[in-house]
Amino acid sequence: MSKAIPYLIQGKNIILVIDSKSHTISKDTHISYGKIVDALKSQDWDALRDLVEPKKAIVNFGAGNVAISTDNKVTWKGQPFHNALANRMIEMYQDGFPIDPMVRFMENLMLNPSKRSVDQVYGFLEKNKLPITEDGHFLAFKRVKANYLDVHSGTIDNSVGRVVEMDRNGVDDNPASTCSTGLHFCSESYLGHFGSQSDPVMILKINPRDVVSIPVDYDGAKGRCCRYEVVAQVGKNVDPKDAFTAVVNGDYSAKAAPAPKAAPAPKAAPEVKSASWPFPTSKAGALAPKAATVVEPLYDLIRVHGGWIEESDVTLDYARAKVAKNAAQKKAQLYIADSNGNEVQ
Image (tube, rainbow, N blue to C red; front, side, top):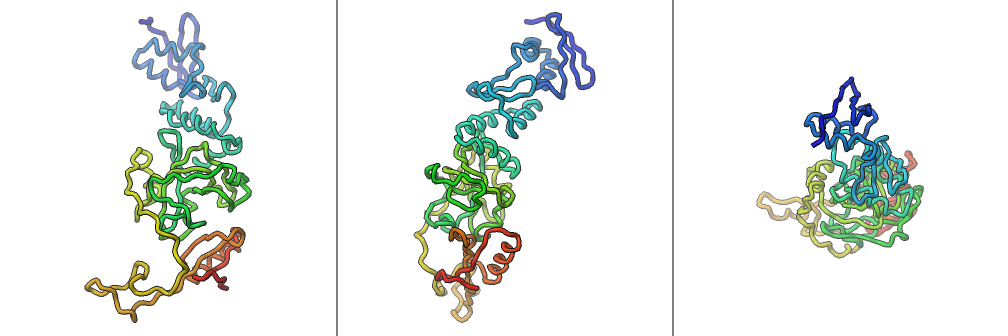
């Protein structure tokens, strides 16, 4: 067992003498300040020596590719790594928080072949308050149709448990392309701008390796990737932010969504028995007479450039207001289509 190490605490500084050599440890600048304080409190002189002496100046993590030095520098395979992720890792380490998920996230991120994605992804997560999972992936949102098919093409199954992927080179990697090809994910703030508000919201688990671009519109609230896993569905009357909790804790046992239905045929005037919820009922629970069933025509909002459905099954008044709002704010240009796909003024 090592001999006790003499020390003096002066404000935010700790002065220690190890083998006749003086060391000044500053709370503001030394990466291991918190651990040094803990070692002093427990009188763990061996641990203290390892934390302070120059030969232990580099702290290695994970597979050894990630390191943090006492002069507050993060390196990847010996090369400096400068971005928001590096800054956050240093802050968490200094404050005594475990950074293993961050290290795994960094290891996954560095498998991404795009430097732009490597630079952007963590900033996107922090800005949009999207969490990192224990295995170094992250969680995001996606709104889908009522039958769990994607809104754009109506062909991709997004029910819980599905893994969706496409060739990376088929995903538009240009952030200036605000609406283009790829598998889309988003933050909570974007949910109100896409699809019908009554449609399901799914939680996706994404490896940062698979992120291709973060478009510049909507204040950087959405992204495109080449692969994701659908791990849960946001329940009714649940704040999307709260829905992350179970998923972060590794509880992916959310009830699986129903298998997707076949793509719907062109809309026709609905009969009483197939009317969409909520439909009128009698006190006994039976369907109300036909005379009482008044179904307001619904419309789709279509993007002028690309032809994708922005929102479906909305009222004409809502659709006209949304077209005018997007035009005024210089967002995606839209037009209104009826159930047969005809443009409506």
